Length: 146
Image (cartoon, rainbow, N blue to C red; front, side):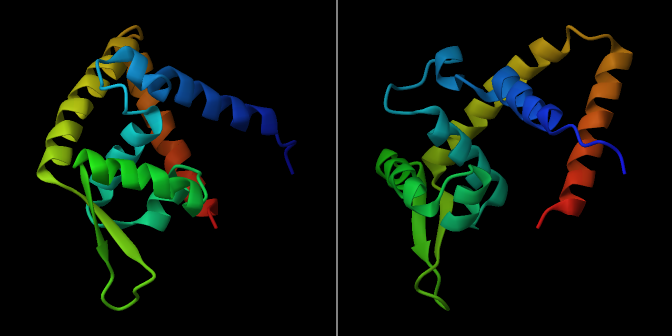
């Protein structure tokens, strides 16, 4: 068995988060009430369309209790609506409102432009290799997820 380089896994997480997703609020002109966690939650909800609060909190690496205030703030902003599951009243689904969808559409354009500006520092071959490596890491990591 190969020696496991745990520090590289932590470093990869830090590099990706710091390069592309940290301090989103500082990079763009968002209202003061919107924090990075709100932005990330909106992106996750957008991808899942109708997604449970538990699923969003897991993707954000937050315990459900810590995510509830985030969800409530997004509901108060008018970006998200919460619906109870008919089969299991303990489960709540989140989905974007039209205002939330419009906000995320604008946000994704801004984030995409920011990522492209960073990626364009690489040659075409490096860009291709970078995205191939990302796809490989994602697909192989999904195989070992619990």
